[in-house]
Amino acid sequence: MPFEDAESQPEFVPTQAPAAVSDFGPSAMESRESRSSEWPVATVATFLYARLHNFAAACQAMSATELTAFVNDVRHMLSDAVVKLGGEIAQRRPDSILAVFSNAPEARKPDHAQRGLHAAILAVHEAVQLATRIGAQPDMASLPPLTLAVGVHLGAADVTPRANGAKGMVTAVGEAVELARLLEVTATDLHWSIATSAATSLAAAGRAEKGRIGSLGLPDESFIDIVEVTGLVPRRGSQTPPRMFELLRDSIAANQQWRKRSTGGASVTSPAAAIHPGSHLLVEGYRVLRKIGEGGMASIFLAEAGDGGPPQVLKVVRMDASANNDSLQRFIQEFALLEQVSHPNVARIFRQDFSLGHAYIAMEYFPSGDLAARLRRPLDARTAIDYLKQTAAGLGAIHAVGIVHRDLKPDNLMLRQDGSLALADFGVAKQVSMLITDTGDGDIVGTPYYLSPEQATGQPVDARCDLYSLGVMAYEMLTGRKPYHANTAQELLSRHVNDPVPVLGAPHEHLQPVLERMMAKDRDQRYPSASALLDDLQQRGI
Image 1 (cartoon, rainbow, N blue to C red):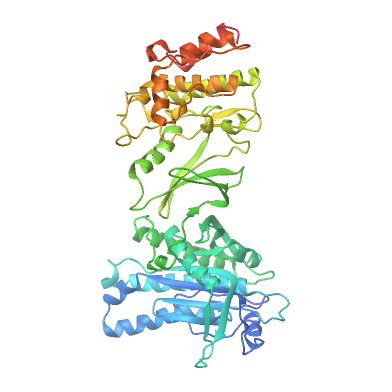
Image 2: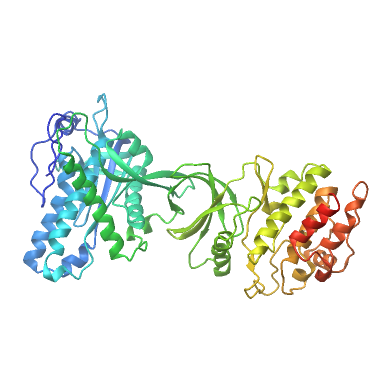
């Protein structure tokens, strides 16, 4: 086994095949010998769950003699690093292992997180050596490669010695065990070799190299931060040649590349995921901070990107058999539309991607909230006109690339801390070149208080419907009330179609001609574009 743990000696010597266990390092030996024979309930320890993928396919292709040797090799590959580093085996199956790493209660510097991650790294290296040998056999060349996925988590669980007194065998049950299993599933789906919780990585005190990050949703709607393990960091004073550490990194990278290649790059959930049906969100590259909202089709989370920078908003929609395909299509389309626009009055969008069972969009975070919240307090005329101009500028930018928002309202206008405003929530936006249809019998896309007459009557729309909605908002910003009210949505739609344009009282009479053009029932009487509206405001000295 490629390991010597004394700080003054080489730490490991990677081999080309699993080797017999020999010579415990001091840290592992001391923790094993000083441990009491009776384990306390709710032991705080590090739990490792590892599973060899494509094991069954390899077994089916072997003769009886080959199979016996192969199963024995896999057993050594899964167990040797655990035993070498002072771990206890809680469950061992032909293709998987659950192990526990702990310290005696009186240990001054608990190192079980370090040993658990170290064992995971060594196991991946040995798995790659085994996969290389098996893959070189002519009868195995066409089979998917053997790959190892490992989850490592530090937490509390009930750990007790085996009733039959089997040496080095324990029983482990509890939340920390289930999280280790879930992290193995996560590693599989993200094509990582080793996934660990951020707390475990921190407790390892820099012993394991970190790669990508992510967030994992749990059944209780909380999150844990997860970290990819990419290599082993030398101990202080280590005399191990640097090339040995490079071999471990190479093995970890090769393992995940083989995994990716065997699945065509797609996430393929382990059967073990069925144990965790409540794990509802898995996003790579982000640390989810908290949930901040729930929309008709999307959950909204505040998150930090792994590469730093200000917080971002993740809009996440679930993809499953019960999901509304039209809603999902509009959600994905939102990114395709916004990606075309770069304007200070349009929300910035950073990324669109797919995670396990979800699609998500990462976009700009607006800590100052939306215009709807701001309208709960009266606006002065100057601020109202400024918001009108900024919204028109944003509309001009999206209209220039053929996008009609179709759901312009104060809730979809976001405020930055510097006072600037940005269009957001393009979930029902359409490109003019696309065929525009209703979402279903009797369904109307848009918000009735701000809907244009042509939308209310189900007619095709163009950019001028957004100008009508902006006119409704302009009236509300100037007066503090909406222009039309009704007891039912249908009555409200009728008022948009048939009622006259509302009249602005003092001191806003000079804006009535502008409002008449924005809210004209006949769209041919409206401003032909947002830029024409801005030009008119400028000519009027507004």
